Length: 283
Image 1: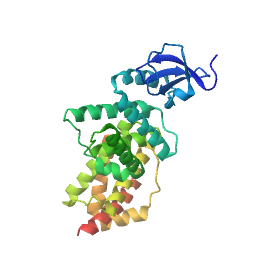
Image 2: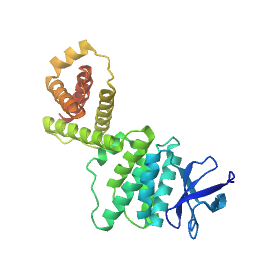
Image 3: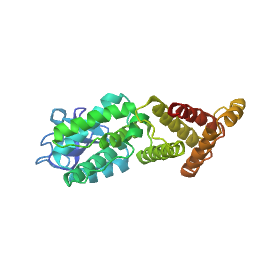
């Protein structure tokens, strides 16, 4: 009989990683140096042999992780798991368990490409840093940890990719959706720069406000959330700042086409105010 401080081996993945069942018959991943060496299925692992433990409750996540693990070198796997523990400590929040599969898969892919001299650039790094500053700072720590422990050099762009994975796990949203939002914001900013014939300072406070406003607009559109429509202000802005007002509608049309969602007219008012502020700074 398994006691509280022991686990029964369900599957040995390699010498240092195995799948086991706890006293509630729930599968857990156990990690420890040599923990699987010369062990057999159904044998008992005691608590003091375990260096790290985490639980994957979703069957699909378990199966994906099992398929992924045998293809990862032990030392790299340890660093990745330590990175996820660091993320959990820094966020102090519930993380969707998919981060174990998604971030592990991403980092293994990134390291393999790096070893072949094929590092991927991140064209949306600045937008990600502005949109998710908290997650970005944690991602910087993760990259530093991996570089030091794995003796490699992940490029700066990886900070942005990892930040998206962290935010995805925190808010329980698909990382591809988050990345598509960053791409959309980048596209909208390029349209603004083209219309104003200017390159916006990506380090400026106005840029940060604009990007965050675009992010919140996109989130409202996805939720179908209506904002209050200030009719008098709308009429005034349309008369006083026709270029900004027309540009705001161009941006809204791009959002509608990309998100396949309707955008309430009031959004044009708030976008116009942000655009007018930027235009004033570049005059």
